[in-house]
Amino acid sequence: MFCCDELTPENYVEYQAVANGPWLPAMYCQACTEEHFINAQWGRYLENIAKADCAAALRRVLSAPPQINIKDQGFKCEGEGSNGEVYALWYASDQAVHSAKLKDSLVGEERDKFWAEKQAFLTATELQEEITKQEAAAANKQGDKQ
Image (tube, rainbow, N blue to C red):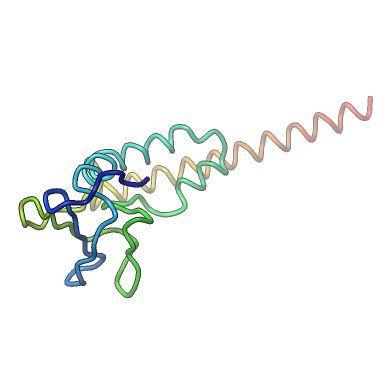
């Protein structure tokens, strides 16, 4: 994802990678930050889970716990105390700090429960694939004997 709009004083965004960290210039304007990240990133995550057509695809999506805040290569969030997610946003348009939390993302017990359910589903998917492979191998072996 990249922003094609010219960054201006009206749409300029800065972000913090960690609490009390330095403010860094974002590569995206305010509209892109809100539209493509805040409002859409959680939904894309859920779509990727739903579209996973095998255990390997599901494993890739569920390789880390679900994010709460914006996470993207365009927002470099590295260093001590960083989990790779944006901590806070600052918009030049109103000179105010804003939450980097994704719309509808889960927190606390709700997030823990969601993560546990997805991990259990991944395990069941992996087991089912293994059973299917074993059954196919046994059927092939049986067919070879005939």
